[in-house]
Length: 361
Image 1 (tube, rainbow, N blue to C red):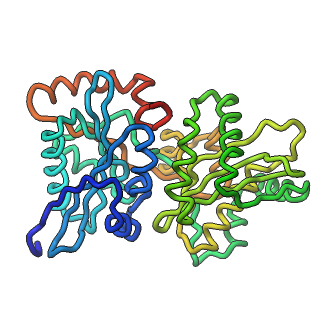
Image 2: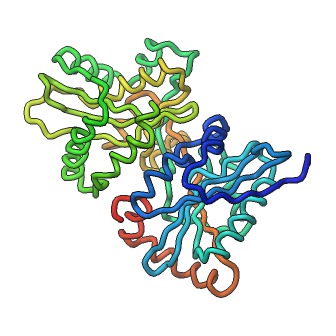
Image 3: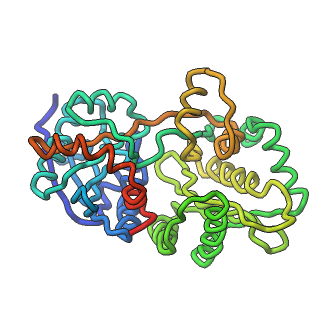
């Protein structure tokens, strides 16, 4: 059991000690960092921290983000948390008790918790503690992850790409497509490419200041990498990557609408990102997001024909993975029972999804 477990609440929007601990902890993720709190502050979310200590040393906790929502009232979410030093259930129970207390004192109607990527054991444990499985997730529940660790050289990683993906990388180079590293001044290029992709694919892009906040939070420290593929000076593709812990995550990107552009710009951009992740000593390149049914079928060895974005991402030789989903921590009593009925319906509203993701204030 060890020494007595101490619980600490901290409402400071930035917490350097927590950030350093999370970056080194198993399952640590940038969504649990002060940088992400800063990004979400642009959409009205407020950060607070619940810290667990033994003899003064951090052994776990979480960053909680909260804001008001229509109909539901005040809402909180813990993306990729809690982050804990071990799988000791005492740590889980301590965080949940602290979250319940915090939610009660601050009148937070529901707290959405999506465990870290390395904690497939937590969903069952959360359900046994009374949390409810949700259909609205705070982060992707399935992805493609490429092993870029030091035990693999770049040639080996490249040979792991699908043959057609390798060919398109080579075609892009043959036709003179180059990839450069962007900076803050290139965020307008990224924005224009994302907006073009959004029009083509029919999704709602993030507001302008989202990219600026992402860069301020992670780019100035070197954790973010903006890659732009060009041909004769014309931008064709762009990706924004975030490096945190042992993983480089593909955060956002797209392909421009340029008539007659050479093939393979997107493939070359991502391959450049994968090579950068390998060269900088990271272990994984996470494409962050494919359909759950595709990932489950591939994981279970069942026949499936991935299409669209999933087909593209799987072309880079990564493994399809399934991450823990989201669970709702509800208040006790009548309000909690009422929310069990309301939440599944409210979560189907596009507005709730957009406010949680940050696409709309």
